[in-house]
Amino acid sequence: MDVFKAVRLTENVYWVGAIDWAVRDFHGYSTRRGTTYNAYLILSEKITLIDTVKESFFEEMMMRISSVTDPSGIDIIVSNHSELDHTGSLRQTIAAVKPEKVYASPMGSRALAAHFHWEDDPIEVVKTGDSIDLGNMRISFIETRMLHWPDSMVSYLQEEKILFSQDGFGMHLASAERFDDELELTLLEAEARKYYANILMPFSPLVTALLGNLGKMELEIDLLCPDHGPVWRSNIDWILEKWGSWAEKKPRPKAVVIYDTMWNSTRKMGEAVLEGLSLEGVSSILMPLRASHISDIATEVLDASALIVGSPTINGRIFPSVAECMNYLGGLKPKNLVGAAFGSYGWSGEAVKELNDLLEGMKVELVSEGLRAVYVPDEQVLEESVNLGRSVGRRILEICGGLE
Ligand code: FEO
Image (cartoon, rainbow, N blue to C red):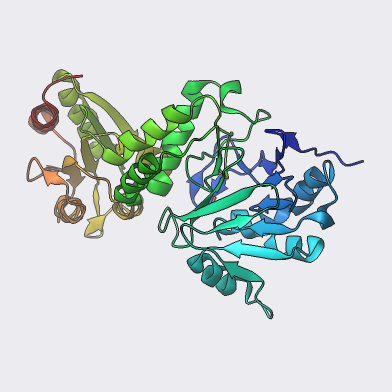
C-alpha cells in the first residue's frame, strides 16, 4: 500500500513533497521542528513537476505523485533551485519518469552539471521573462540570483495565479497541515523569521529589490508555494510585508548580549550589562553560548539594534565558541548595529580587543572601548558593566528615537 498521498491545492495543482519530521540539524541550522521538502505537480496537458525532494525522500515523493497520476506521464520538470534538498532526487526522478524536458536557470544548469556531472546533460535553460507552454497553461520564470544561491529562480503559473518561490518565503517546519491558515500565526512568524535570519539576511538588499520588482509586475498571487513549510493562501501579504521589514531592518530598541565563560566571571559581567540595558528600558536578551544555538542567536540579531559580546581570554584569544558565533554572524552581515565587548582575563587579556576588531569588521558601531575584568569582577567592575549596558541602551534609544 502506498502510504503517502498527494494534497490537492487547486483543481490542477498538488503538493507532492515530503515531510522530514526527524531532521534537527540542517547544515548547521537547528531545525527543532523538522522541515518539509515541497514539490508540486501541475496536472496540465503537459504534466509538470516543480522541484523534487532530498534524495532520501524520493520514494515518498513518488508515492504522492502516484496517488494522482502515473509518474511516467510527467512531461516536464522545472528545477527552481539546485541545492540538494530540492535536487537530491532529481537524477532518480529523471530516470524514473523520463520527462521530455527539464528546465533550470542558466546558473541552475551550471550548478546541476557541477553536482551531477551528467554524461548527457538533460537541462534546458530558461531565463527571466521566458515562459513555456504546458498545453492549456503557461508557466513563466523570474531569476532570483543570490536568493539565496546564484541559480535560484521562481516560476509563475498564470492560469492558477500560483508563484512557486523555491526557498523564498519558506520556513523549516514539519507539520501535518499544508496551508498557512491551518497553523498559528505566531508559530509561522517564529519559524519564518528564523529562516530569513539564517538563510536570507546577507542578501537583504536583493530581497528588497525583488519585492519591489514583484510589486511593479503586479503579479496576482492566489497561492505562494515555497519549497519548505506551509503553502501561503491566507497570509500572502503578511509574509511579503514581513520579508520587507526584515530586509529593511528598521532600528528598534532591542539588544542581544552573547557570552561564553570559563569560571563565571564573564557571565557575571554579561548579566550586569543586561541589567544596564533594562534600566534604560531597552528590550534585551542574554544568550549564553553554551545554552543557545547560533541559528537562534542570528534570529534574535535580525531585528536588534545592538550586539554586545563577552568572552574570556584563553591562550591569548577569544573563547572558541565565541569565535564560532562571531564567524557565523559575520557571514550573515547583520546591518545597523551598535555594540560593545567585555570579558574577564588572567594575565594578557586580548579577547576584548579581538572582539572589538571583529565587531568593527561587521560594521558595528562601538559604543565603548570595551570592558575587562582581571580574574573575577569586583563591585566596581560590575557597576561599570551595568554602565556599559546603560551606555549601549542610551545609544539605541538615540538611534531609534525612543522606545516603541
Ligand atoms: Fe531549501 Fe537552498 O535549499
